[in-house]
Amino acid sequence: MRDPLSVVTDAFTSFLFGKVETTRLPVRTSTGQAQAVYLPTAAPGLGDSGVIIGREVYSGKGYIYDPFQLYGQQLPAPHWLVLGESGNGKSALEKTYVLRQLRFRDRQVVVLDAQGEDGAGEWNLIAQELGITPIRLDPMAALDKGIRLNPLDPAITTTGQLALLRTIIEVAMGHGLDERSGFALKVAHAYVNESIVERQPVLSDIVERLRHPEPESAEAMNVPIDDVRAWGLDVALVLDRLVDGDLRGMFDGPTTVGIDLDAPLIVFDLSHIDRNSIAMPILMAIVGVWLEHTWIRPDRKKRIFLVEEAWHIINSPFVAQLFQRLLKFGRRLGLSFVAVVHHLSDVVDGAAAKEAAAILKMASTRTIYAQKADEARATGRVLGLPRWAVEIIPTLTPGIAVWDVNGNVQVVKHLVTETERPLVFTDRAMTESSADLSDDALRAAELEAEERAAAFVEQHVGDSESTVA
Image 1 (cartoon, rainbow, N blue to C red):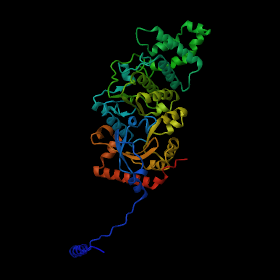
Image 2: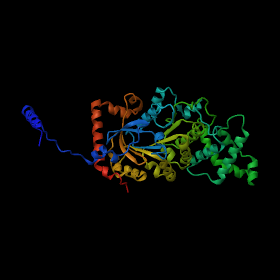
Image 3: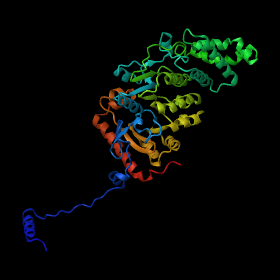
Image 4: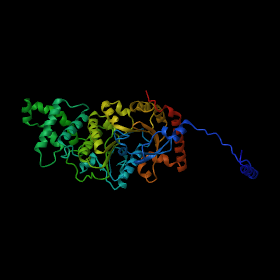
């Protein structure tokens, strides 16, 4: 039986305010909402240490990524592959990522800048902002006392020098060296290193020795001297291109004094080299090996090596072999290799399919921007992406990408601050097309794209475990 005082109180309250009780609407929720709220079944994050990338389109959570923080627990390797067609935001992601990493004092970054316009590389603005002068490799400038990198630099081990010389020749010839040509190169290299002590040996010394081998070399092999000369002739002709041909001036002299390898950001401007010529993989091989022996040291610094147009590396079996060694050593030396590629088919269907697969396997982080449907399916098969992720890739709008961090797959909207915007959006076509839209219109378009992506993910969340056949 109710307390008489409570009955009187309720009656008086009803008289003044009407009915006390209210009717609650029934609670309705979707499976996706329940997953996000009920944390044990929600997709795990990557932690809260590192640099902010943006936010997850589906959950709205901030997305933080750092290979050095994740390595060993959530990442078996600190290397990163970025894929996607032009104009979708790859460059903006790379640049903001580097700028944010450089806020840590123990970070150092090297960029191979293979793109650019108006006679300067794409990273020129950022370098200027940080007070850094890019290392511009340009055959025309090199003739007038420009930057030189010596493949025979004493800082590179004798074994490294010989491996680099072989790679240069094999890339240019398009096939491996036969035993006789390899022997001629080995003998010439050994003679040059032993006989020249008063200065740095240079490529022209190797070319001269290949054309005029020592009689002792022929006697050691019990073959005529003319045969030894013939074995090294093709090798000499290839190296001569770097001495007197279209690549002269960049590699046929002592390494330029004063290159600052202690700067937080080091930019190699390769924009003056034809990116479709055989010169580009040769140049990347020389820069990569030179950096391996002069820049990477067993100290406490964390280093990032970012390569644009990285298919020049991955698609050449000879260059890829050099970089495989660099990536393997990089894990114990605190090196994160970032490869930026337009299409995965550029590398997996080429002559270096085996080497490409080995490098891709080392990349535990994959970021995929918009691609055509057939390219997305091929990418999904190679990388083992969930089916829902493959289906959403062709619908992605600029700035939104699928991130796969060792199996943790999210759709992420990359965020750029107003301070970063003028430094990272250097593509004139992108700038001009965006200039016609107001800030409100741009934001509305972004929100619409994010809503479409979120709806797609929610619809396919149950299929997250299935992969492309």
